[in-house]
Picture 1 (cartoon, rainbow, N blue to C red):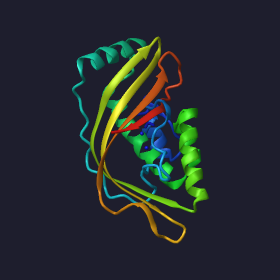
Picture 2 (picture 1 turned 60 degrees about the horizontal axis):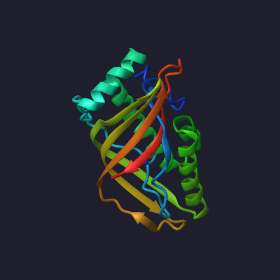
Picture 3 (picture 1 turned 180 degrees about the vertical axis):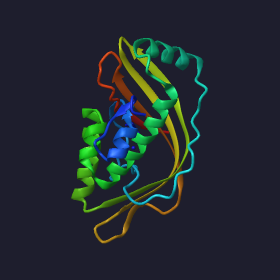
Picture 4 (picture 1 turned 45 degrees about the vertical axis):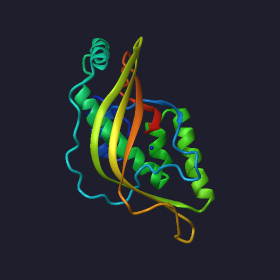
Length: 212
């Protein structure tokens, strides 16, 4: 289960001064939260210490259809830059993954659209009621790329593909492993961020998530 999140692309945060400034204008929204179903939704990386991150491969080549949409988006907001957006989106992805694992509802509320927040909140509540804890770590970001983009009037939806190496473990009240393990698993997620480019508010919000 990415602010912003490039000061002009993500306004997600008040979370940590550094992260808030860095992600200051990137995210969007999704229709519902597709991860929760099973008792333990696939962890959004926890707030545990993480090894130093290596540079993330960011795809600079955009498919023709995406490039055309991005060009139209720049027509509405000349400050929009795909590269900066992706940097912010990666920051948002890391923050949301950590906040979900830590049960940090305050951070999630700032970065997610209402319906998506409801799904995350429900999954956290389910975990708390079961006396379970989540540990998630993003060990590496292997790819961050714009998968698709749509512009309806001035409202932009940008779907980003995140390919990451993660460790996700859910433990019970006695410390027993409920799901997951210490093994590193490569995960591919598609997250959609949304923003009204015609508004002064530069904040993008997460409006949809999907795992492949």
